[in-house]
Amino acid sequence: MPSAFEFIGPTTEEQRQSRTYQKWKSMIDRNIEAFMQRHYKTFVRRLKRSVPQDFRWEVWKAAALLKDKQEEGVYESLCNEVNKYSSLIEIDIPRTFPEHKSFDSSCQQMLYRILNAYANYDPNTGYCQGMNFVAGMLLIVSDFKEEESFWMLTCMMDFYGMEGFYREKFPLLRLYLKEYNRLAKEVIGEVHDHFEHEGVFPAVYLHQWFLTVFINCLPLQTVIILWDFLICRGLPGMLQIALALLKVLRGALLKLHFEDIVKFLKSMKTGGDCNEIMIGRLLIRQAEKITLRETVERSLMDYDLEALIRQAEEEEAREAREVAASNSNFRGQAGAERAAGGGGRESQERA
Image (tube, rainbow, N blue to C red; front, top):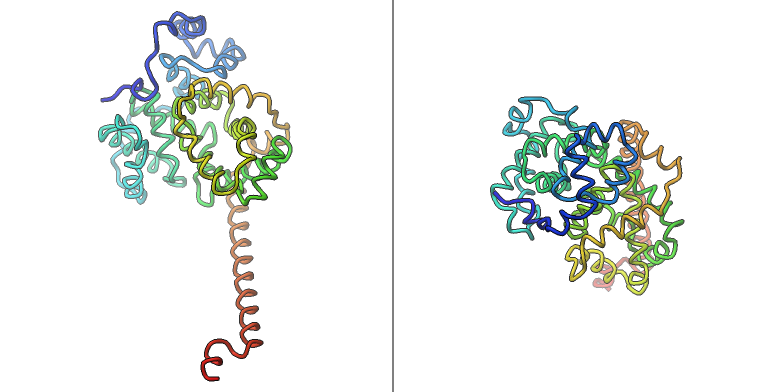
């Protein structure tokens, strides 16, 4: 069985001697849940600044209130029960972290069971691409604690509201795309206008960014730092991170055209020779400078999921009607042009 350190890197002796490490060790030793309740602001402030890997999983569990979610025997009863999503999950498992050879067949089997169990646990959400990376990340950070990773996934879906990203029609994703578009005009107006001019619309890159919570677009060690921030900040923090990322990259992006922009955004995952942890911390510092208005926060946190689903269905039906009308107009115009030109190819051949 691989270790989390094979993916994330080991904790060095220098890191263990640091003040940050010692502060987190003291919090863990004193009972992290109790510390969080008594000193919540201190807990959140420190979590936003990142957590040593030795303590990360315990801290994430405390922040997500995992103990309140766990039920004995439930996971065991759900993980191997075949459902209508099981075959789809099987297809996506080998595509999860293919660049990490340590994510071997034993890891893949655990990931399959976690996703399969969740599809049985919440059949309304079931399974959707993107969830495999989220569950895989939890498995890695937990140091391959399978059942705990499953319960952490349920916390993220329920407590953090991620299920709305994966329900049919992607209702919450649609809401985030709308809010992002409004915010992008204000925060990164020049990049927004350049992307629009080049035909690089938010859905081109945000679908993957949000559905995989940045796993598919940035190096793993960078993503883990971002998740420390999101675990305490909540999902609206994804908007701040997305905007911060494009703000940091503004100078490079403004020089590129459509194909090169798309290639550049896809190439960020490799990281190159950059310090991936420092990049994560830089992005968090920039993200915290971007303030979401109270009305935006409310719309992203206090929503009726069923109403969002109905709205998504109406939008999709309207989009389908618009496409059908556009195709009909195109066919009518083409027919008129053929008639004006003498009946088209057959007429010309007869002539």
